Length: 253
Image (cartoon, rainbow, N blue to C red; front, side, top):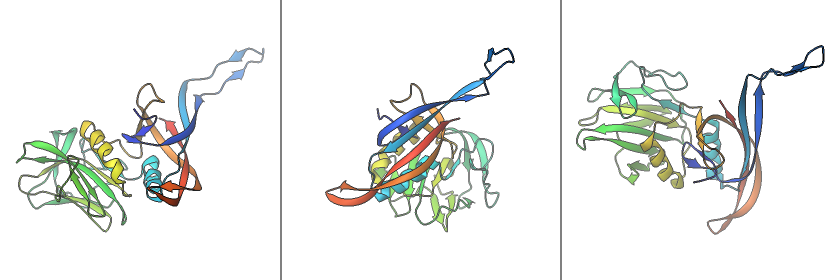
């Protein structure tokens, strides 16, 4: 088990500290007696990573900040950030991979203007009537694709054009669930962790993340914030590179 993981992605931590945040104000009465005004307690954690390559630092910044959109289709087709479809195509239904899903007619497309940019990663589940099962698919802007963690040519009915993400119904593939658009390219080393996490459970409602690992007795829902980056030179894959050590905060919600 890693010391810290966010949505199943191990975060290489060099050091960290925990801070307890009391909700409410303590005070003293006129008599001098202490009055406890605390109504709740939340945790905050501050971490610093090990040196990271520029590519990994960029991806980790996006992950920690909770960048992107997640579509659960639990009753509607709005993303976790409140973005609706560009056109009202497709119908939601219950009994998909993780609760709600989206059904499309063959040839019909539903799209969301997520503004993913030129570098992006998309995850989703699609039901294959040919296989008789839900398949987990990862697409990346460099053309790399994985189905159930295995490199394959099929995009699983998903495409990204000018930053807008779309899913399209095709023969034997008309049902979709838990569509996630991330405005950064995940490193190859993240792919097995993404598959393991997304196969077992739905993605978090971005920008919220699920923190887990040895520093916590149980999983916690958090909001992340990257504060500073320290440029350092270190050896990476046999070469000297200039990378970053990130400082970030996770706040329990």
